[in-house]
Length: 192
Image (cartoon, rainbow, N blue to C red):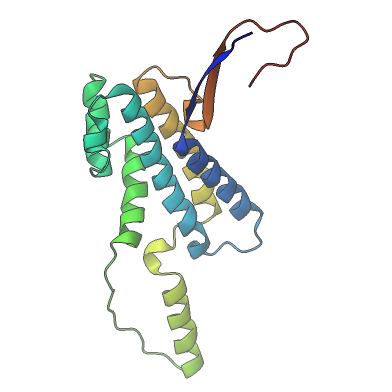
């Protein structure tokens, strides 16, 4: 008996599942300071880009020439090839933009200078500076509410990119897809 198996393994699925696992880990953690949410923000952006590259590679013959372009250009290309227009002012693309802006502020951030005080004591000054250093004010919105909202918007965004090309709604969650051809005797295990 001959069985042929076609398989497509996707790196994006591993990244997506890592983001979901990270969100679950943060939820169950006793600490929820803004800095604890930063890795999730980065992984959400990473997941979007990985999935865009996966979809692009499936639908665009020249994707290998554009896969290293900026994320926004890839979104525009995917929409153009699908005959759609981008609407950056509404979800899900508004969320994609917001999450990449946060990621970019981390990856391409510049030092921030400021003058603080006056403080009534050295202890008060130390507390303030420690807080500002570990949880900068521009990350203060990162909390459990942000996590829950972001994960809903993340899943909606991924489904949106799948829908551009009529892919299954759960396509972004797949790590591998296999198909087999050949006759399997009753009682035999499938090869997958």
